[in-house]
Image 1 (cartoon, rainbow over the protein chains, first blue to last red):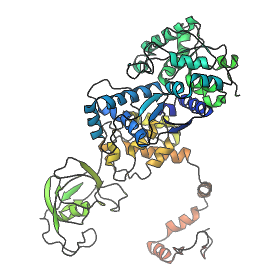
Image 2: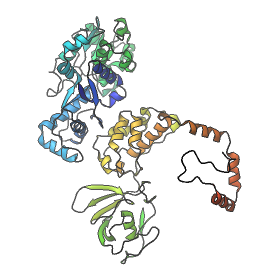
Image 3: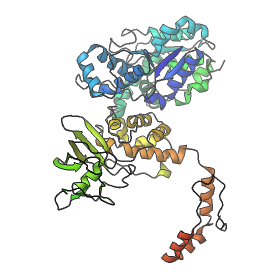
Image 4: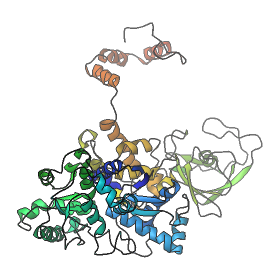
Length: 294
Length: 265
């Protein structure tokens, strides 16, 4: 099977670990990843101003690329890329006036009418591979690893592009269970990580991260799984400081769900680039005997 | 940029030499608008020659006249159409009812750096040009490029940390600045691309061993005496040397030709 894939800028730089683990996992699952040619930034943050169409041009241009390269589905990994692409796609599918304006502005491109479906990798894994098949493919079960999905904001909001209904965390839960992990209920799974507040109000971002990490530790969660580089950064990068300031009592490493998938599938741990995880030790995974190439 | 010579546009086209237009027999004239004013210029001329025909004299905004120096970017529009077009004045032939504007210089931000200090990571480029991240992928830069460079492509590559791709995609850039003139994010694309190519050359691209060896030779002083001899020569002596120099034949197969005088090899 071959899939058209949109990586996103961060997955080529700071969050190469999110991408590399995914590409290696998909190869192990027999899926060939075809990165679309000539993609640009997704826009990073969806513009909420109704008539601010210039900020929809970036995401739509990527969908144009996917369409002209023959993709029916465009798979993406990063929560924020997924969100901006899927929401821009909704505009192109449902609002004919805005669609015409955007198409007319992009007069150097083919017209785009919302033909491409934007799919998050979690959805793709459920629909095209299936949890049973993944479970059969597991070579290094994540036995005894108490982990919880951390969705943050953009995987479920708003409802019309959410990968599943708000408050439901079934996709990642089923995936992690298929990998042999113990999935814990987590009250803060859909709380905001502090997002870009980290840039202008460190205290605010610190307190949101502290709330999430504290809630995780109190539930007995040993690690969090995410698909968002910004969540990973906010929860991971600040942990040292939060521990030092006594705002949290214990560290809770944050891994990308693709990294956990990769190690369970027996992919060489080097492909997971754990060295790029912000402040997340791999000792936990080593101690659980999860970090071995099959 | 240019001054209008204090004389009326020529009524009878002259066959000209040098920078003057050479007109074909019976060339017709067409109307063009230079900075909003109508001039009748012979068809078949480039924009640059047409402007000179109309009496403008380029002090700046003209360079190689061969489409490669980037000094003569021009924005134009055809009467009756909203669409803007972009080209080099020395390469674009005039058409009837063109509205022309020269943009010989654009005040785009140009960062200062020492190439040997900044290192080869994309973050160095991001730090020098944080405005890179103001790109909204509108693609007006690409549409404006007279060299058909994929400007959005190389800007995107840099956001993705791919300096090699940016250096390769921007290779044909002639630094005319039309991209920056159209950018709503006020990004100096062409300066950033130049930095990317320099970083690529300095830190990423494989180094040529023979070049390294030659630089070492030069630095060891091997050629100092020859240079001193040349510097000490009179103009006449230099000219004589130049005229009498041995020259590799144009069609010599590579590596086969040797000069008779071998003492400098």
